[in-house]
Image (cartoon, rainbow, N blue to C red; front, side, top):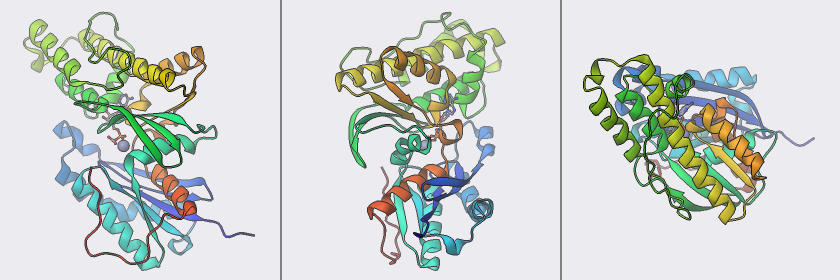
Length: 340
Ligand code: KG4
Ligand code: ZN
């Protein structure tokens, strides 16, 4: 019988310290330690994030091994996020992984975070077929990418200002809601009237696949200043719900419209959607419905694989390992970080 291939995947690009084990293409453990304390500051504080990664990376890796019922010596390679992300946070994962691999005398594999989100849709039983359109919507990125074949990408659209998750987080802050803003806006929007306020969308024209979300965030601010000058001291719950519902609808409308028109223009049937904002319930429902109506197949990973996680890193590491993309055993003194 062939030897099993076992990969440890490590994610530390922002505020999640995560480690996962993939064995022969199956995730057998995925531990995510989320740095909840950032909510006190209304956003991620980079220095505190890197210190928390330092504190938790060893326990998280040990727990991933324990749950997978394997020992470190069973590993064939260590895959880690090498960017994009917060520099201090990345450095913890990069350095840990390289020296862990060196200690075990196994190769390491550098993984791009966006690439990992794209391939997170492959963690499910139903996988997209090449060429497919990938919509990456997270706290740091908003991109439409055509994936022609394994690891071959063509970016056809991206945000010209804020990432969509960033817009959710900033609007939540204006409404005195907790960080991260996406999950709470998603929840409150259910009780709001999404037609109560009209917010404008940028780049509404056809044939252009770029996004812009800073205008809508500013419109929410102007709406509050005009109608509730004392908004910093609290707002009626009904108003908060209505703003959440109207904001979310405008954002989802623009994302769905752009994505579907890109799929139409490039004649692509399979659409993979990933990144933290793909956890949004309205967005998921709208895509499943419109996909069916337009005979497009929609692939969105389960919730646990939408936000940052080690499983998506182990997954790309495994694919790269099989394709021969892995390091030699030489560890350079200066980590070769790719910061984008
Ligand atoms: O992919 P991710 O975990 O980290 C980055 O790579 O940025 O995405 C985090 C982002 C945050 O901005 C958060 O507010 C957003 O994903 N998010 C959501 C939801 N859950 C997380 N946005 C909208 N609706 C959600 N349910
Ligand atoms: Zn991410």
